[in-house]
Amino acid sequence: MKLGARILKTGVAISLALFLANLLELPSPVFAGVAAIFAIQPSIYRSYITLLEQVYGNLVGATIAVIFVLTIGSNYLTIGLAAILAIVLMLKLKLDNPVPLTLVTIIIIMDSHTTDFLSFASLRFLTILLGIFSAFIVNLIFLPPKYEVRLFKSIHEVSEEVVRWIRVSIRHASDHVSVKEDIDRLDEKLIKVDQWYSFYKEERSYTKKQQYVKARKLVLYRQMIATSKKSLDVLKRLHRFENELTELPEQFHMMVQERLESLASYHEQLYMKYVGKLRPEHSESSGVDASIKRHEVMAIFVKEINIALEAEDRDFSVYHLMHVLSAMVDYEEQLEHLDLLIIAYLNYHSDEVDVELENLV
Image (cartoon, rainbow, N blue to C red; front, side, top):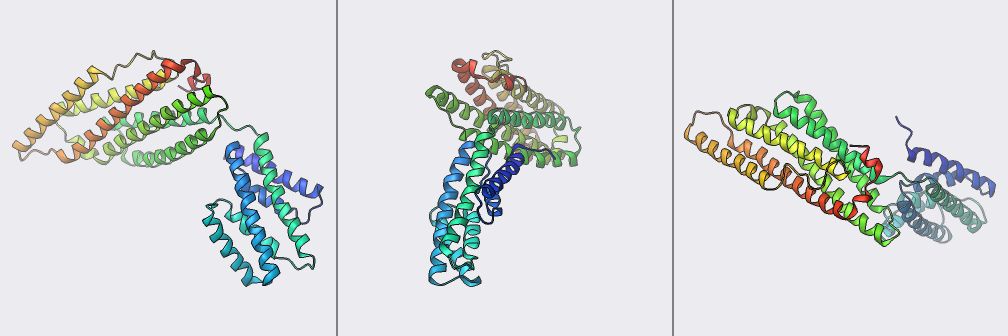
């Protein structure tokens, strides 16, 4: 298991919260450490949003707790009722995230057996806030990772694996169980890719130029993700209809294999183009030639359908083949759209590509 930045930040935030609580001689400093755990976030922007939400949420929780204790007292039943009211109110205010810490605040405030309740409640509320602010300080001190680099790396890694499996699968050289396991793993990787995209999207840009470049990059990376998902869809179809594809007529099978190989190479070259290792105008698999090849595939497909319909005893599954071909067409269209976006981006921002990205391809 790797020691990630968030694990390290959580430990530092807990230590800082406990240290400050002891330094200020607040009662029950452990509650500051608990609050710090809830407030740690992967980015400065999310940390700021969490800070506001947690402060609002704990104000709500502390207010409800104080009102309940001063009016109907504190016992197991009233604490539960206060928690229910707090959850309902927080959901109405659309403050879902701070609900757990709000409930912690209610419990530690209402679990009071002192005569000076208001002073006790105030100190515990301040202890919780200290933990939240400690986590925010740690998030500010620890520089967030370069989410663009992580995003591009994760997209590129997924695409490389999918393309490798497509090349093996179309030659019927893949192990069925291994492909199934890797498809499930790649689905999980794409979920992580979406998370990196969200983190990158939330990063703040402080100048008009940065905002403009960032907006174009977001469109570009969103299309990269969509293209990777389409390539995985092709792999899933090849895997699902593996047996049916082995029964294809030789000529048609070679045509599909050649087309998939061309699309796989096209996909790889697009990443090289984006990082500046290929000229922007280079695009061997798009344009007029690609359209001709696509029409050739469809023409042979129609021809084979007619042959299959005339020869009733021939083992040729048109229905299953249509699934594979439709996925290929979708994949090709996404690649061509990504190519256009990369060309448009490089025409205006060729000097904005990070050197770290170039080293990943």
